[in-house]
Image (cartoon, rainbow, N blue to C red; front, side, top):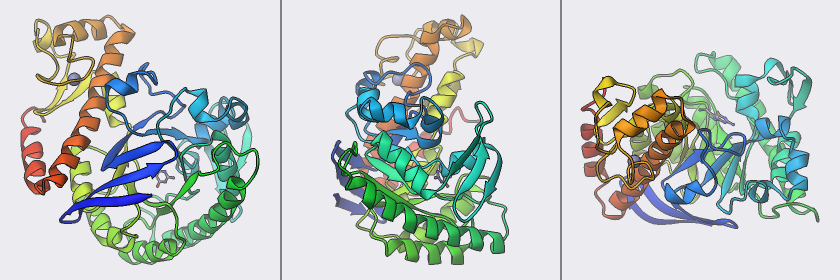
Length: 377
Ligand code: PRF
Ligand code: ZN
């Protein structure tokens, strides 16, 4: 159940209730592709960094350990000992970005595993069956994400097929949810809007998928090579055609600035590998912009990454110590950097929610963006 608590312009402050708890939105989902947040972050650590939702991948878990293994272990929540809502991406996007020699047909996609090269097939029904085995809180529809540079004719053909796939996903999910041995009988399904940067295709598709009465709607096919301005334009164009009384999820986005711009345009769910990936390289987010802890200027710096930050790294350790850990190749260094970055994102979302509650989102956004420029190159 999705309930809007407050609006500030188009920015929405809402609550999304699932069988695994209530999510306060706008929210940033923390990426755990293979049922683990990279950088040695445990399920237990999530408490200390204010994580609300975890995101895992159908494609990866199907290949390893196999969704049958996860099913026999009682589903993803039990397997990774996590009681928070978990969203699984459908595999569509990963098949296109990771798999080798893929062939798209009406029935689905034929491809070779990026791990050992063996031949595989995934279509809407397979994706739903895998996600049902995983028992995630929210399953994503199986879609094709056309390149931002694809031509109008190709994108139109692809999006029409994605719509037919969505109808098949919904039918299969309804069937799976009603089976006796299903892990999560209340598994939700989010549809995904596509259409590259073509307004007409995006709008038409948004209208068609809105008729299906799904649990939520994602905007896919963005942050795949188009400019930021093009991405914001697509959001302005398409979000008004998605049901306002359902959550809106912008897939795979993005920088703090991208998130602020998208919240302003009515988006409430986000996910991105930036905070964990950058953390693993010693690149840290602060309210004054990015810093690189490997920089020599931090060798004798006894202050935390960010003064006043409540993350497990800043509560206890100095920049000099964490820099030393990174330079020594100690795992703890990476872990602390990832924890800080994820907390930075999760905490920014909390600030965003507070700002919308108080009707001062514009002011918050302006100040946050202004502050973060200082160290940015
Ligand atoms: N589709 C799916 N997952 C995704 C995307 C998409 O278009 C994107 C695009 N940024 C990220 N993850 N299924
Ligand atoms: Zn911190």
